[in-house]
Picture 1 (cartoon, rainbow, N blue to C red):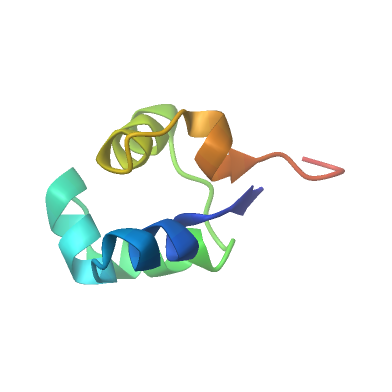
Picture 2 (cartoon, helix red, strand yellow):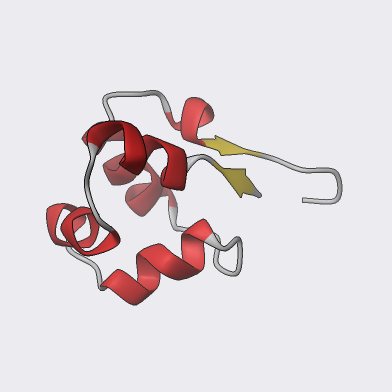
Length: 66
């Protein structure tokens, strides 16, 4: 699953650590999600989308084979 978290963070000018604090996870979790090594739970995806004031589908996109 692809995501635009890195771009959204740049737009809001927040670090991985700041995003992690806002949603209650570690910075490493944000890093692994951004790197497409970890697919977040529905709840976590919703929290991330809420921080950026966007729909989940605007942050996360299914890829062929997902």
